[in-house]
Image (cartoon, rainbow, N blue to C red; front, side, top):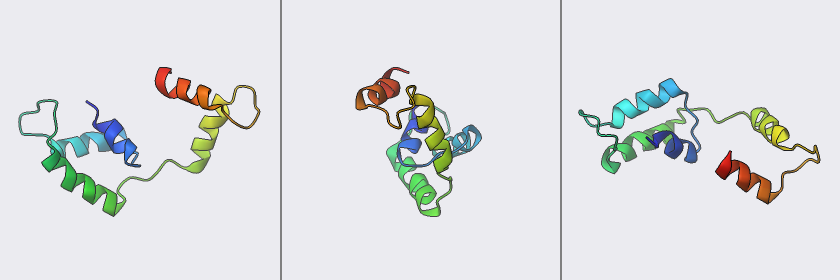
Length: 88
C-alpha cells in the first residue's frame, strides 16, 4: 500500500502507471499487499542508478510553496509546514 510513499521518499516521482509497473516487478506471484525487501532492493537500486523517474521540476515545487504561503510573505513557518505535511 505504501510503495508510492517509499519510492517518493527516495527522490523518485513516478506516475501512477509507472508505480503500478514497478509494483508488478516486485510483487509476489500471489499479491499479498506486502513486498519482500529482497525483491525490492535490486529493482529500486536499478531505478535509482538509471535515474528512471524525473524529479519534480523546481518551478512546480516553488508554485506549491507559493500556494501554501497564504500571507504572501515569502516563507512558510515551521509550524505551518508541519501542519500541512501531517494534517492536510
